[in-house]
Image (tube, rainbow, N blue to C red):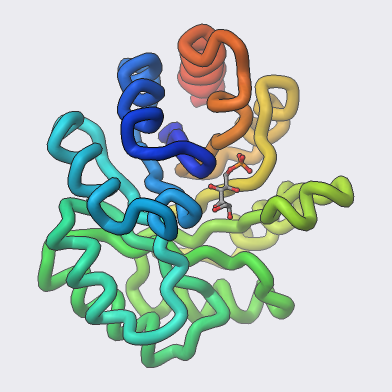
Length: 211
Ligand SMILES: O=C([C@H](O)CO)[C@H](O)[C@H](O)COP(=O)(O)O
């Protein structure tokens, strides 16, 4: 199980400071959608340059023009690029093809997918690297989480790795670990805490103990 730090509500200098604090304990740094909207792919480039030993995920949440956007994120240094599960099949296949050409990986974010079981089976056949269940901020606000969805994709996904994101905190991490996703994505559960380093260290320890 890997731990991904999601950076959403920061600028580039703040992102660098945050990664420095927790770099020993995370496997992947996500440059979140809001950061890319504010700072562009320069954020991906600068984080990869400063932390070349960490994998960097560009959370583009691609919906169209997939091959082109995967190419641009790859050029900026992203190791993993996200596309939405609700995108057209052709877009997801195009993203996979371009990622393979560039030696990169594709994570499919299943946020907003209504027919989760059926769609997870389909995208799994397209050769994607990760399939991620995700409760976005707007559904977190009304008390939802993705544990049930994780169980669903764990049951039907045969090729891709599974991932979970959305509102995971230290106190909810044990039940996530019990469900054994390949990748656990944590944003505010680390970045919103007073002692980020201590929380990231504790999360990493719990994940290692759960393996
Ligand atoms: O993808 C995300 C969200 O849509 C904003 O871009 C977050 O990175 C993801 O939800 C993880 O963050 P937390 O929910 O704060 O753990």
